Each structure stands twice: as structure tokens, then as C-alpha cells.
Length: 486
Image (cartoon, rainbow, N blue to C red; front, side):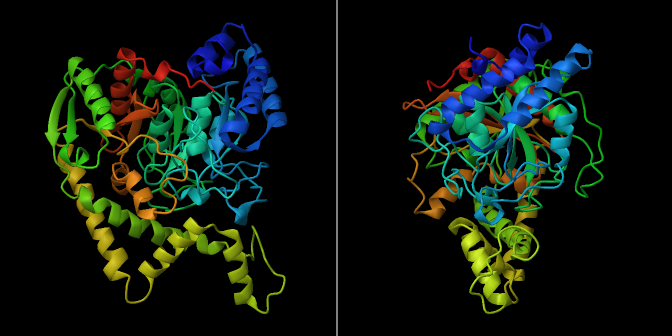
């Protein structure tokens, strides 16, 4: 088996048995990056010198008996997460040359755990998109079919794991941006509970929705990464001051007797028949292992999309106001007669069309005379969506269903219709509005050979339940063992 076909756990086993060094493993992965990038474009910045230096340090640590689960394992980081000394562009021209002076908290924790960072992953600009076609530096292609989108906004992160050009990655999820590309690329991805992973050092899109999480090939690998990045951070006022449980122990729980809710609102007209067939088969497998399937209702689901596209753009309008050409990032000052001209030129040239669209939507929703009618009302309906989940979790331990209505669609297919693009996240964004943990696990393929994912949602801080469900499913199936023929 080639190095790039290994899971994280398999790579670690080879390192622990001294059958390969971290330097050798890193060189093999860098060669894989070089071989696949012309077709996939998963990376915006590649850091071979840094990676090899970190790999050398990891080998020395292992020789001293100081290695951990992630020591010397090559990884990638979504380019919306700050990395000291390595540019962080958010896939935007306005931050094209921004080099952060500090690491995000989660990056610091990964470095302390022995991470080898291969580079920064492509994404939709400022994490605004569902296909990674909104990147200012060009789209990412799906490793399973280069004519297809990889999903978004963490498309580069998911595509890289699927292509074997890193063993794990960390993305962000504001309305489905980890789970949706994980589904489309046939990998595992989790959005933890809001506050479970520090947001310090994440470039903000929507502050009440953003959450970082891992993408891996297996649920067991995901548990290892989550154990490192989870935990309270005093630098983040929204970080939950709760101890981190033993996520690895959750993998052996089994699911016998677990009550799994199946929301009728997630199996509606417009759901692709191939997606429904794959998800129904996954539910049958879980039931065969002793889980009880319970039909539930989430009655306000139909309002989730409208609520999200008021709240998220409103918060984006506020967060992105800082990019004014004065403090950092792009500054267009030539031929400007006054300060307002500089603002206009900088933001017009620096932001792409989707970011501009959402800033305008959000600014309108927050403007005088409209705040109560839009943002205020959306916040009230958000509370109703949260109550739907709270009521459901009084009856069930987790909720299961599809991640997306369709398998990955072709590149360019929906770029001219923003509403159709937004509908890609109809099953994922309510999870963010409620602050819940959610996970995508590979559960099949379409007739075109494009992956399909099963979504598992849980109550706040119930990541262990999600891991138990995902592990039980993966132990009984082989979808996650298949590799794209790149």
C-alpha cells in the first residue's frame, strides 16, 4: 500500500514500529501533493521546508520516547485559520499577502502534539460558499470526479484528505462547510458543539455560527484529532469551560439500545433518489446493530434557510467591515480623491462577488428601520429551531439523515443561481443555528461514482455519541476504505 493510501492510524503504526520515519512519510506526502495538485488544486500555500523541519523534530521526539498520536503525521489547515509566519488568505484578494503574527489556538495545540503542516487549503472566499468555486485563486476539483465540485467552503480540506495529500485536515463549519464537503469527497468530517474548539485565530465570518473541526478518512482518526484541538481557551470568550472527555473510549461503546431520530423533514421532495437510497441503507445497518429508529419532526426546518441567510450575512457585514485598506490587507490608494474613494476601491477590488453579495444582504438587514423586521425576527425563529432540537433530544439520543439533497454537482452548474447553491446546505445549517455537533460519514456512492454521506447530529457536547454511531457504522461497511482513482 502506498503511503498516501494509509489512514492516520495506519501511518502512526508504521512510525511507532520504526518502519518509516516522519521525514520519509512527509516526503512521500509532498510528492503526492505535487502529483495531484495540477488536477485537484486543494492547496493555496504549500510549506515543504516547514513540513520537513517539523518532521525532523518529530523523529527526534519519537527517538526520545516523547511521541503522541499525531506526532510526525502530515496535515493541512484551511486557509481561514491563522498560522504564524505562513500566509493566511481566506482565498481572498483582500488578504492575499497577509501573514499572521500568531497561531490560532487550535494550530498551537496541533503543533504541540507534533503536527507536520504541509500547507494551507483552498476554500470559498471567507468561507462563503458551498462548492469552493468562490475562491479568488480558482476552484478545487473533486478527487472522485474532477468535473465535480468538492463541496464547500472547506472543499480543499476535504479534497486533500480524499486524494491522500494529507492524513487529516482542520476546516471550519458555519452552515455545513465541514460536513457537506466531507459528504461530497467521501471522508469523515465533524462540526463540534459551538464552543468545544477555540475560535481564537479563526478569521471570522459569522461569529455565532463558526466552528472549527477535523476531516479524516475514518471516525477513529477523527477522534484522535478532536482530542487534541478540543478544550477551553481563555482567549476565546465563547469557548466552553468544560473538560474534554476521552473520545477514543467512545469508539468502543457500540450502539445497541441507542435511539436514533429520523426527521421526516429531511426526507422530502427534491431529495435525490440515490441519496435517499444510500441513507436508508445506512439507517437499516444501524438498526441491524441494535439501534432503534424513531420518526421525529423538526417542524421549523423549512425556515432554517431564510433564518441563516439573514443572520450569517448580518454577522459577516459586521466582521468584514474591518477590511478597509487602513490597518492591514489590500489597500488601494492610487487615484483616490478621499477616504471614501479608498474604501470603495479597496473593497471593490479585494472582495469577490459572493462576499459582496452577502455583505450587502447583511448591511441591509442591519440598517435602520429594518433591524427588527429582519435580524430581530430571524433571531426569534432561530430560538424556535433550537427548541425543535431540544424537544427531539428528549426522545432520542441522536438524529440521522442525509447531509445534502444531492451528490456533488458539476463545476459551474449552479454558479449562476445563488438560491440553488444555498439549498445545498438545507440539511446542515440548522445544526449551526442551534450550536449542535454534527458529523458526516461516507455511506455510499451515486451511479456516477460520486460519494454520499450520512449525517449524525447530537445534543450539545454529545460528540462521543456521534463517534460511537460513526464507528459502529464504519466497522460494518467499507465505503471509507475506497480510494479515488487519481
